[in-house]
Length: 114
Length: 112
Image 1: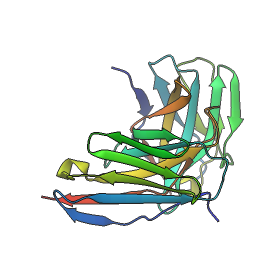
Image 2 (image 1 turned 180 degrees about the vertical axis):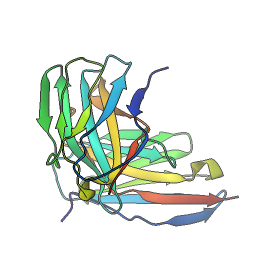
Image 3 (image 1 turned 180 degrees about the horizontal axis):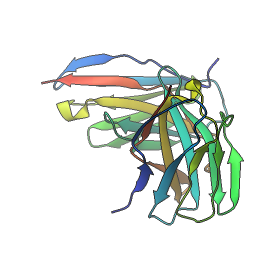
């Protein structure tokens, strides 16, 4: 089954404790990205990657890091989480369908930083 | 001003009703317009997309784009309880794959 898998789905942590949210896709997509979803703000892009070893900042990259060492994996790293990073996070991969890039989302990771 | 504006609702309709969901945008460079559906505790999934202006129909769903007014709509005919979800509009200026702009989503409940 084609899917984007995120882990963990739910996490409660404390300020300053480094954490990693993993993301893996089995569709051989070159493009992957991370979004956060907050009430009233919608989905905002954190980082994206067009291919292995190629990453770039989205709209809200502060406080986050990413890496793309393999095509299928795109982990999101919070080196020193703060309460304003409490959010619902989505990983997505995409492919070009005709002229259109279709995004495939994971099921989300709900993070609470105390 | 946000690039994409969407009424968050919530919207509650009886089963069988016609539902109209709308978004406005400010960037005239947007070319591709999408609607994603997000069920509770799930990730968004693509429902429909259109390129430039015009209408597109898929079963009970119709997407409309009016670029002159910078306004897009999603119509759901004969709404079903299974349509209860949050609907997100999204748009992108090109097909480079890295610039998607999302609305905040409209929560819809279809009452049996």
